[in-house]
Length: 86
Image 1 (cartoon, rainbow, N blue to C red):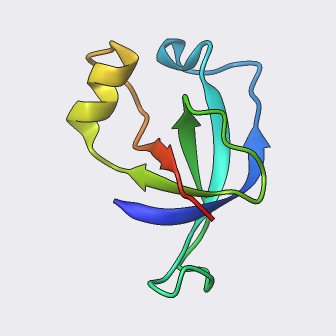
Image 2 (cartoon, rainbow, N blue to C red; image 1 turned 180 degrees about the horizontal axis):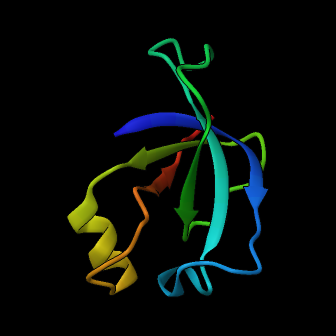
């Protein structure tokens, strides 16, 4: 699990079939202080309705993401687990 800040959204006219209907966020992972960027931004799927500027908890748990998406084979690596309280 990793804290990240939502910095944007992503759209695509052509995408993997398992991504149809999912909201895609661009998130910047954060260091332990909760403010300093850590690495390059990544794309994450979102079911919680997070918005730009919000801090979210993301996971790279492949099994959990496949179960969430009900897809055995998906290219998704990151998914939002929750929105952090401010």
